[in-house]
Image 1 (cartoon, chains in turn red, orange):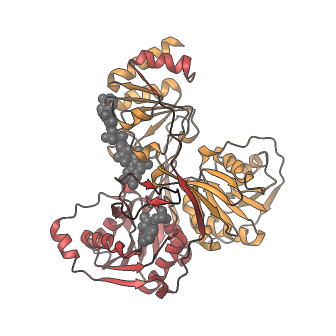
Image 2 (image 1 turned 60 degrees about the vertical axis):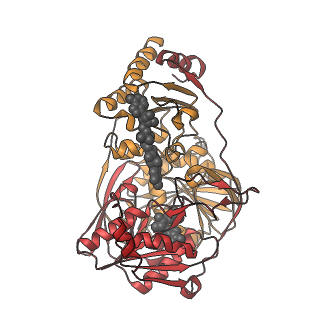
Image 3 (image 1 turned 135 degrees about the vertical axis):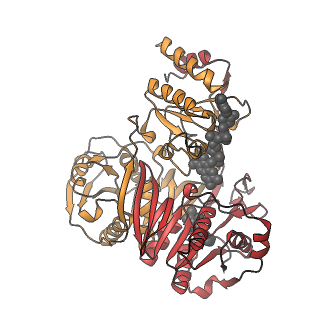
Length: 249
Length: 315
Ligand SMILES: Cc1cc2nc3c(=O)[nH]c(=O)nc-3n(C[C@H](O)[C@H](O)[C@H](O)COP(=O)(O)OP(=O)(O)OC[C@H]3O[C@@H](n4cnc5c(N)ncnc54)[C@H](O)[C@@H]3O)c2cc1C
Ligand SMILES: Nc1ncnc2c1ncn2[C@@H]1O[C@H](COP(=O)(O)O)[C@@H](O)[C@H]1O
């Protein structure tokens, strides 16, 4: 089976994002970028399936600007076999990305598509289920464990009340929680090797997909700050404040 | 203009979050209909739903295919209803269930979706967080159907007082794809995290079983729910369903006591709308100490027993 894994390039989550002066958007052009943290366990899971002999090939896909090549190289360094960059300029929304990924899936015919559960820039958590719906496939979101079975994958999902084990027939879409695995530490020889692995580029238009954004971003702002608090110097003083001042205990 | 709210329920009980989604939907200048979809127990929850103020009609769709609350059949049925009845909005309170099936509905209807909406200004203007909650975006959505999850903590819960008719729907579209093998729900015997008045949350600083016991003792005394950081979950100190954060549960209790946790942005965006925040941390400079209304720089192993005694003595 072939495994497709979708990786997004986002502003590195150690960087504090800055707003554009006129509030029209977030200043991303010069910010340090990295692979979306939730995509790392997705890539790791894909590579482990290949190492276990369940998958023959792992193909990493990213949709976006030419710079996304960087995160595809990271996926290749993790152990993906080849990569595809679907080049698109400007804003992308999960709906459009899911259509692009579905077009790739129709061509590549993977048995399994892995994605991160959500991207740390738009915090949408939509692309995986949207992709599954478009393909008419089953899905398992928020995966914290994954095991390949006969014609299906068994996934443990992290849900509000606890955990759920589901079996999804292949082909399937699975989105990764951070708890899915501990992604490997990529060493220099893997990074060197990744430079030689095939990376194919294609324009989004060539897929015949309309990914034009549907939502208008009117403005961005910082969330209101909480009023400054006070320091208390003992547990007893804290208890007194909670009772008499805040009146919560 | 009619909005369809998909109400979460369990064991025949309507989830509190459904009431919050109703008051969000009312801000859309639309009539509000509530869908309760599930197995046979959906009927009991639909009765409760009929009493929610502001609901014009309750739709109850009970069928074996929906009993396990799997995304594929739920989404197919909701999309089918949206098409048949021409709803202008489809919403649900943000939860692991809604995040699982609602994007499928949006894709089936070929419309963009809004996740975790925190404010509804009018029928087409919305606010939602980006970048781990460090940015608030104002967006305009003019899709023919507005599909969204709304953040429970941002909207009050609609109270009782309605008398909506309940319409029984036959089961409809229900593709059989995934199967539920097992569900392991944790029952801590404590209040539900997102509905609790007091949350006592612990981080890596709890260190070991002794720290966890200190936290539990405080939670027991206050009748509080227990919250956790990803750090504490990763270290095996607290269960994963206790995790608070943008990528986990978002809470806004009256009182949030943060113990031995640093206050990373992902955690903070899941609790910063709490009314009163207390931080207990050995590190004066920890971000949570800057955010807290009351910050106590102290070792939790010393501070928690003293806090418990002081609170008990006061009452
Ligand atoms: C994509 C992504 C998503 C994430 N989502 C979430 C999320 O939803 N929720 C979440 O919580 N995290 C999330 N995280 C992880 C988050 O970034 C932090 O790593 C995590 O919250 C840190 O947990 P912590 O505060 O328990 O640990 P630490 O940051 O290690 O803090 C421990 C604190 O305990 C204090 N301490 C130590 N000993 C004591 C003592 N004896 N008494 C008192 N205080 C003591 C220390 O001073 C320190 O401040 C996410 C990370 C990523 C990359
Ligand atoms: N532009 C993109 N290119 C490739 N994968 C993406 C892209 N956008 C989103 N994804 C995938 O979809 C997941 C969820 O993203 P989102 O729905 O935006 O929160 C990410 O973790 C990626 O795996």
